[in-house]
Length: 231
Image 1: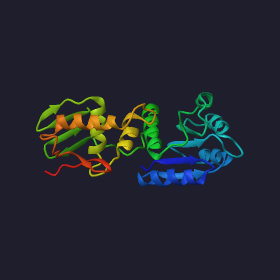
Image 2: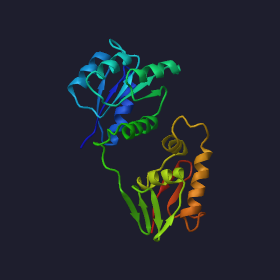
Image 3: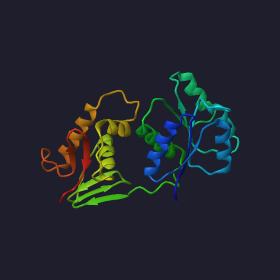
Image 4: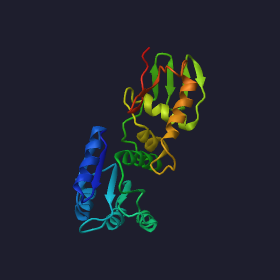
């Protein structure tokens, strides 16, 4: 079933960017540009999640969130240009599920959205993820978070597994180190992209017959990493 998202922001470029990216992932995305319009749309439509800017004309985001909570528990992620922690706390007290501080990128948006779906249990309408990735003698069981190569289980750390699952479920898609950092470690991770390189190296040492000439996790020079089994 197609998942529905409402993006509420009076900055049309932000709305356009989020809408375009989420539509590429199969979401149906509606937009509202002021608080009153957003409130009416949420009343009239069934959304799986709402991205709600704090600074809006007519009704601000906190007011919209508070009123929505009187009739709906739809997941709400607040978008705020302010870094003041009190603003963030205030937003959550009004019933928001999470917040993102501007400026942000679409990877943050997607990562936060998936996290909220997991926490709230509102991902029932989400397209089912691949349960198993099988390529040659490579078998990744996404439910049990286990990897088997040639029938033998390969022990991975949590982050090594997260990296591998992301790459293996998007064969031939190149992820930059920054993208992998945002998705796997979170946008607020304090560290640098060399962390990704270290984990990729360790992952290759565990899953590749020849880590120097990998069969699974490849490097696209100047761009990032991708997964492909040529066998």
